[in-house]
Length: 252
Image (cartoon, rainbow, N blue to C red; front, side):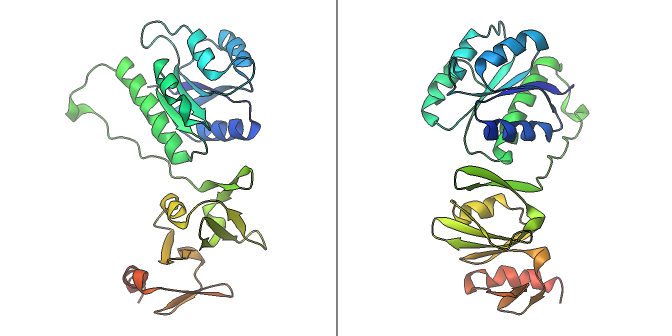
């Protein structure tokens, strides 16, 4: 099946840029338009021809996302664009589903959440376009692309952080300090260590203490009770010692 032709609509430049970046790194999506307002998007839709999918913010001036969804004449299923709403406010979820939205992403969302919604749109388009095929004849699904970075909320913006730039992460109650190779000072993000741990690929990062996650390829030296990253020694707590010992056993 061909790529899904997409547009992104959001009046916040950072949010619009993030969605566009996510679209461009997803193999089965094609970004054909980006708009800072629903009014601009409505004009653009008349010029672009057939569009498969719209990533649409809700709260925008002049014409909001819900109103744009109502204006669009999608006709019978499969003849017009599907909509995935992107918004900072979850109170619009019911209205979103009333206009037959395919999914609803609450900001700030990460690439994993975006990909889950996009895959739903891809599967929906496939059901409409591909005739039924015996299970034995179906090709193996393509592996999902692996992220090389994540976005962290730092003050009032989302900051892109590459996995290979992270040395270690330190938990501080409701915040984390992310220590980077590229910066003399760590960045402070409003999230929990547990939430961040779930976003980091386990083959590259390991939690070794209730307050620390380390990048495995940044470890310079190890003992049974600690790791050395640069000039910093980080303890391995009893809670995580068994998993860490299993990791060490591969190298000893």
